[in-house]
Image 1 (cartoon, one colour):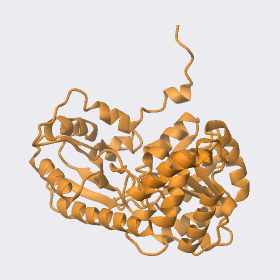
Image 2 (tube, helix red, strand yellow):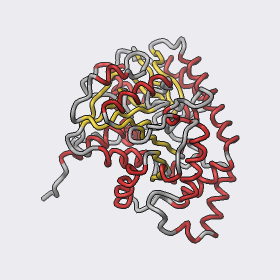
Image 3 (cartoon, rainbow, N blue to C red):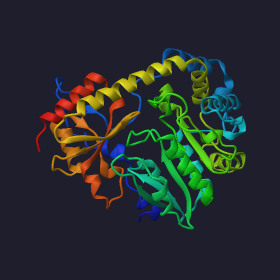
Image 4 (cartoon, helix red, strand yellow):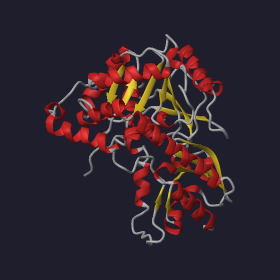
Length: 392
C-alpha cells in the first residue's frame, strides 16, 4: 500500500542539479583530466576569514544566535538593507519594507504564496530559472512562458499579450539565471509600467546584482514614489558573501505585502537562521571592498568566457554575465544527451537547455547553461579546449 501523493508534486520535474549529479555515478576522472563542474551557480569557497570569525564569535558568545528570532528577520539587518538599498537605488526604502528569508528561493516562494493560488498564472521569461518553474508547478499555478529571442531580453509588449484575468505576476531575473544577460533599465521600467497598469505584481530577482558589469543603479524603479503595491524585489546574500549554506535572502515590498509574507514564514521557517543573518549583517558593514574584488574576478572570468568561445566551432554564446553563459551548440546531439556524454567523454558537467525551457520548445535541444563562476580563467580555457576536442 502506498501513501497518497499530491498530483501537483508528482507532476513537478526532479531538481535539475541533483539529477545532473547522478550522471557522475560510476564515472571516474583521471588525475590529468579532473571533472570540470560548471553545472551549479554557487561559490565553492567558504566566506572570508573575518566573516567566519564573526560567525564563530556569535556562536560562542551570543546566546540569542541559537534562539528563535523575529519572523521577518533581525531588525539591524533589515535596517542595513533598507539604508544601503536606498542609497544604491536613489529611492526611499524603510526597514519595515524589508523581510529576511531562508535564502532567495524561499523569498520567491513566500512572495508567490501571497500573490497567487492554484489555477492562477505567472509570466516567466524563457529560458527560466528552473526553481521558479518548480514552485509554480507544485502549487498548481500556471507558468506562462514569455520567449526572449536571440538577445535573451524579454519584451513588455509581448508580455502584455499574455496577460489574462488570472495573471498575478511577472517575474524577471537580472542579471539573469540562466541567460547571464543584464536587463536594460528601460526594459525593467517598461515591465513596471505594464504591471502597474494591469494591477499585477512585478517580481525582480536581483540575486546576482553584486556582479553586474554596469556601474550605478541597474534600474530606477525605487525612485518612483508608487513602487509600493507593484514592485517586489528579491535578493540573496549567498553569492556576495559565500553564505550559501547559511541560507539568507531578502524581500523588499510594501508593508501590507510583508504582513502576508510573515504568515508564510511563520509556518515554513519560524524565522531565518540567526547565525546566517549575523554573518550577512557583518558582511554588509565590513566587506564592501572585498565584494568589489569578487566582482572584478567574476567580470574577468566573464571576459575569459567570451574570448574562449568567440571562435569555438559548434558553440555560440547567446548570453554571458554574472555567473552564467547560456550557449547554443550545433554538434547535432540533443542537449540532454550531449550533457550526459560530455561527463563520460570530456569530463565536463553542464546543464542542458531542456532544464530551463518548456518541453515543447525546440530551441532547448540546442542550448546549454555554463556556470563559469565555478572555475577560474585557466579552467575556462581548459573547458573550451575539451569542447573543441570532443567529437559526436
